[in-house]
Image (cartoon, rainbow, N blue to C red; front, side, top):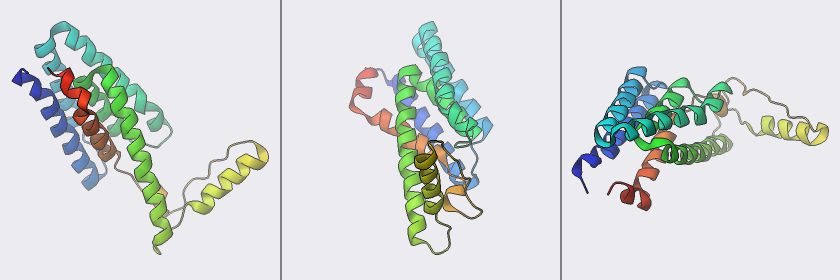
Length: 184
C-alpha cells in the first residue's frame, strides 16, 4: 500500500470528528471547517488520482449534498450537516459517500429513537408519544398524514447534533473490510 493513501482516511477522520465535537458543543458545524475539508479532499484526490480523482471528488460532493438536502429542506438537519456530508463526498467519491450517508441516517434514526425513549424515563421532558399517537390515529382514520410540531420543551424538539451520526456512519464505512482493499 502506498502510504500517501493513508492521508485520505486520516484527514477525513480528523474532519468528521472535529465537526462532531464542534456540533456537540455549539450545535453548529462551522463553514470554515467544512470548506477547508472539501478543499482538502479535492486537492488530495487531484494530486493522488489526477483528473479522474477530481471528477470522482466533484461527483462525491454532489451526492453528499443531494442525499441530505431533503432532510434540511424538511427541517430535520442543519445546513452544516448537509455541507459536511458534501465534504465527506470529496474524500470518498459518489458510491462510498452514498453508503456513508445511508449508514449515518440509520444511526441518526437510532439515536433519535433513544432520545424519544428517554422521555419515558425523564420527569423533566415532555413526551412525544401522545403527539405521535395523534399523527398515527389521524393517518389511520382519515388516510391523510398530519404533522404536529413538537411542543416547547419536548425532547424531540431539541437540536440534535447530526454531525455525530455523520462521524459514526463515515467511520463505519472507513473501517468496513472492503474499504482497506480499495486503498491498495
